[in-house]
Length: 397
Image 1 (cartoon, one colour):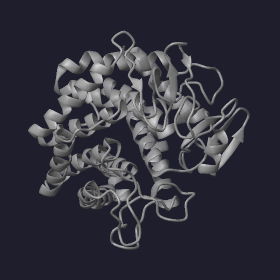
Image 2 (image 1 turned 135 degrees about the vertical axis):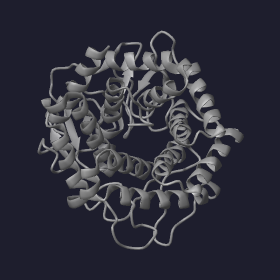
Image 3 (image 1 turned 30 degrees about the vertical axis):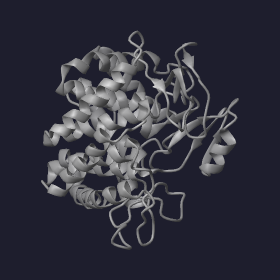
């Protein structure tokens, strides 16, 4: 297994280097959101109109928008890659170049303005107005604090912990108000994303857990407890994807605070994921509203990628989830793309058809087989491989 994991992580590194998602390849101008395969893709034009910055290639586009979360997720992957391989790849230097882009070139960090926006990150560099999402900013908060804690030199250069804690306070303030009223607004903007879905709300809990590790603020725990009460008491008709997000938030919270409600949420949503999993293949039915749905479809943008990350951490707390985690990981290692073209070789595409045993299953303009995401698919699956090699998980880093 160790050999397979190293091979997989090396392939992921090479895909980022050779696919065209980083121009130049050293990361100085960041990482594109994704590759969009265009041949026969009926949703391609809607994708272009919704994400109007792309480089056309033969048979695919590089969707060039620079998103804060995709860039930081990739930088974190490269830091982990350096830990695994040492000096074999210039991974840590590339990560630092991406961080230079984020903090010094992108304009994505709101350093100035109204008090409610300072410390937040806008969604994309191609927008000329605020679009501040709960999920993207939760990842920014969590990873700024994680990297800042683990890499004092980088923290000193970018003030990562300071910016991460500022963002944690914004998230802790906003989540309860938006949970009570999803149409709540700030003086000049509205946080985007329906926090009644774990896709948005549980990721905030994940971020606040990391913030609580840094500073024992009671309101962080209070907000997490409020959200877990909602997850446990409401009659929620969540999808498999939302179960994965709910587990991710609760497992991070339990690792840090050891709350009974966090453990209850952890077991509830881990059990749901395990019950939905195909015991032979390890797949979980695709049900996310931004991707094609089907029992035979393995979704790696909204479901399997987060489920494997969350179950890896859950298995570190309760070994009864280890078999399920290993089953999903084995499936992902099996389906990693070995196609020869450089824009495919070493990636995970957005969806795999378990019936035909090929990448496929259809497309939506954000999800589906022909969207190959940097930050939301390839980076977190790569984290899992690195974590396994480093004997850790997302709750510890």
